[in-house]
Every structure is written in C-alpha cells, then in structure tokens.
Amino acid sequence: MSRALVLSEGDRGALERIAGSGSEPHRRVVRAGALLALADGGSVRSVARDMGFHQDTVRSWRDRFLESGPGGVGAVAPGRGRKPGVPAAVVAAIVADTLFEEPPDGSAFWSTRSMAARHGVGKDTVARIWRARGLRPWRSDVFKLSRDPCFEAKLVDVVGLYLDPPEAAAVFAFDEKTQVQAIDRTQPSLPMVPGRARTLTHDYKRHGTLDLFAALNVATGEVLHQTRKRHTGADVLAFFKWIDLHTPRHLDVHIVLDNLSAHKSEPVRDWLASPKRARWHLHFTPTSASWANLVEGWFSILARKALKGRTHTSVADLADTIDTWTSHWNQNPKPLKWTKPANHITAKTRRAQTALTKSATHH
Image (cartoon, rainbow, N blue to C red):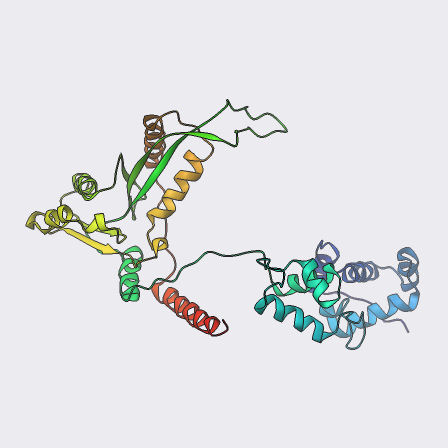
C-alpha cells in the first residue's frame, strides 16, 4: 500500500525553502520539488513522469523523507556518492606546502598552477582545496601588535572612557591628519553619464599640504577642527586652547590622544600644569594602536566622502572643502560608537602574540 505524504506546516516551509534556494545542491532542490508535488496530491507515477524519473526513484525519495524529515532530503548515505578524486595524502601535502613552504622559483606566494605542477594535479583541484579551507596565499592582512609595556592599562583606560564616560565631563578623541595634499589633475575630468563613470587622469599635480587637527566629541559626534601648516608643540597647544574655549566651563575635559612627541612638548606640559587647567585630563593610547582612537574613524569618513577623487587647485581650496564638509557634519553629527570591551581585545592580542611566538619557531 502506498504511504500518503502529509506535511506539517513546518515541514512544508522547510521543503519550500529548499526548492526555491539558489545555493542548495541541485539534488536537494529537485527532491524537495518532487515531495511538494506529492504532498499537493500528485501520485508517484505522475510526479515521476512529469520530472523524468523512474517511479521507484520518486518512491524512495518519499520513503526517505518519511523516515528522516527535511534533513534527509538529498542526503548522501555513508559509502555512497562521488568518491574523492585526490588522495587525502595529496590534499594534506598541498595544504602543508601552502602554509609552510615557499615556491622554489622565488615567487612571493604559490599560484594554483605552480602548486598543481608540484603535486601532479589540476589547478582547479588546488583552487577547490584552498577554497574549502579558506586559504588565500596571494592575500596579506596588515597588522602590528603593540609593544607598549603598559598596553593593557592604557587600553582599559581609553575604552573605559568610550563605554562609561565620567559624569560632568566632555570626552574628545583627538589627533592630527598630517600632510593632507591639495591635488589637482593634469587634464579636465569628464562628468559621469549613464553607462560611464566620471573620469580622472591617472597623474596629478600637487599644490601643497596642510595638517588637519580634529577633536571628536565622543558623546555627541561633533567635531572641533582647525587646518594648520604644521603640527609642532605650539600648534598642539593652540588647538588645545581652541578645545578649552569651546567646552563649557563646568565640564571636565578628557582627551584621548596618541604618543606623538608634540603632544608631550614643553609648551603643552607647562600650559597643562597651571591650576587653571585642573579640569584637563590626557589619556594616551598604547603605542602602535591608532585603531584605539575614535577620531581615526572620522578621518576615514572625511577622506572617503569629501576628499577622494576631488581636485583642489590650492591649499586654501582644500581647507575650504574640509571646513564646508565638517560644518555640514556638525549640523547632524553621528557619534561613532565603540562596542568591543577591553578584555575582549586584550584576550585577542594575547592569542596573536602566542601565534607569533609559535610561528617564529618555524623560521
């Protein structure tokens, strides 16, 4: 007697998702479609005829579903299915060579063709092995671990300001974006038209540089900024006075900044030593940890939205662009939120340091 196929609401939903998927294996999509047709009243004979399969094949799909549910649709039984064409030992050797060996021809990294030639397999086979294991020999991620002996203490201090700022205080993330270039193109650019992006010549003319000082209010997202010719201790002091002038007198001032010598120069130290600056507190990020300063994120937004691909015929023109864009930013500022607790970061850096130590023993 033929067993009827009755679907629960959950099973029908699961089969419909499989049948409509663009990423599921083809065998699962086809079998899910056949099962839905059976559940909608089709007979084994009619569904098999419409789909071009034998009745026994469709009947086995139905029986497997009744036994295993949606998870068994298209599942390959142990010992069945296509057998691997490359021995496991060869796969292991390819992975090991990718990770630990350098190409003998002096190349910086293996290509699929050079690795295939080494092991007597096809380049597509190497590509599949790399893809399955997330190996990309041609890529390099840039990083640097801080060697600051006070790394953890400084990080906890800075992240604490971001996540739990003190009451009655303004917290600023401050830094300089130095050597911002006023760049012009050697020929006029063509405007964007449908089907074609705007054009820029590959070469350019330099019209000078400026240094951008910026202090991001962590709570509000507003930015205090100045453009200056240099970034000496005197320039830093002038900008600190600018921050002091624009911060209400009843608030303490907490500044997150890096370890640039100008930030610790004698003019700055003397000014901060005055009893009138008792409300000022500097919080230095760890060395080689510019990512810990939130204003770096704002610099990235500025460069991407206001400076990239734009031409400037003079430093004054560049300064006007920065002033205009920052003014509009401050009309509707967006705070940059820090989300990662300090203990998560320190745990990750410890793992990275351990990995580097182990890696060094292999060289």
